[in-house]
Image (cartoon, rainbow, N blue to C red; front, side, top):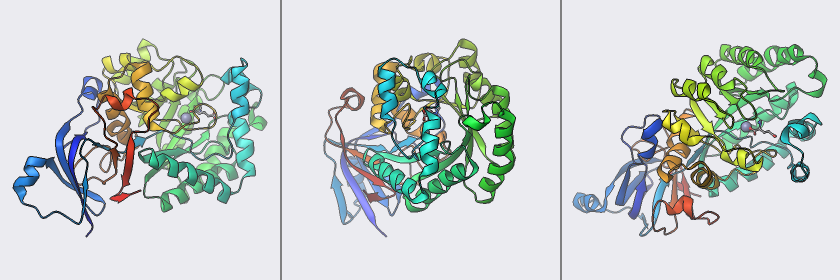
Length: 414
Ligand SMILES: N=CN[C@@H](CCC(=O)O)C(=O)O
Ligand SMILES: [Zn+2]
């Protein structure tokens, strides 16, 4: 049995015997142990406590002991919303945006998601895998230990299945926890612009049965947005997915008050994601539900949109998570350290709230909180060891610095 001990940890962060989804005020409570030790056997956390407690146990120290004097240990980030599999970057649209075009205008010209779909359909499964693998490796070094990945750049039967098979292969090869989401309803392909029911039929009749048969997805997602999928279309597609055991996670209220939040809640969605455009009824509906609101601040930042109203959501008692939305169009970064930092600076989340939302609630938003998202006995030893830092608040405060010394995934230093 491989045993590792980390000693003299300045602060062991998010230590919990129980790990409920956190809502409202609970998000500000981030339990920590100062001057701590953490013991790992194989891939699992088996014990933790203060250094005084360790001294009292007279435990023989294992061969691998790491002295973390001045450093902190956190659970790895749980990034519950990404589009990690894509064929090419879209910086020419970035320039178009700098010159004044809006995201919706670029999409209306056949850019945006359709641009990514064209390139994805030209790429081989192997090329897509290699690109996504490289991105995943980079994210692991940045502290991500669990990630949700969506399809949605195929928009054809072959393209969507190709994306989902790439995600399945990533899941088979990586030690990081990966959840797969089918997002065939990301936008209408050009040839179905005037034939919405034709494309919805394609999703329901031709994509979903294969996805279910090959066990290619855990969740079903729809971009519920003006000019994309209506609340009625969203409900129809999600219900079809639910027949195959896929739970909804919805793109909601990004550009408009789309009704996506209420639609997702009515469907019992695991999460409704984006939430840049919220009004009181949407906030209250979310607060009164068990659906998690996943905020994607780097997408708001990149598209120069108003940030998600995190404070109003927390004050209303919502359960919120933070995710990167990594994709080539609206958030070309999967760096969760940046997400945490931006959540504090731009959405006025407290460091404790942001860390909880990016770890435990992120794990809940992809249903892996039994294994990840906190430092708890029996959970997977996926950890961030920081460089020496003066305080917890220094982590979001010191934006731009890489404060991660190393990352452990399932008991293995990366
Ligand atoms: N909003 C819809 N989908 C993605 C963006 C996709 C793209 O622009 O390629 C998002 O979550 O931001
Ligand atoms: Zn997205």
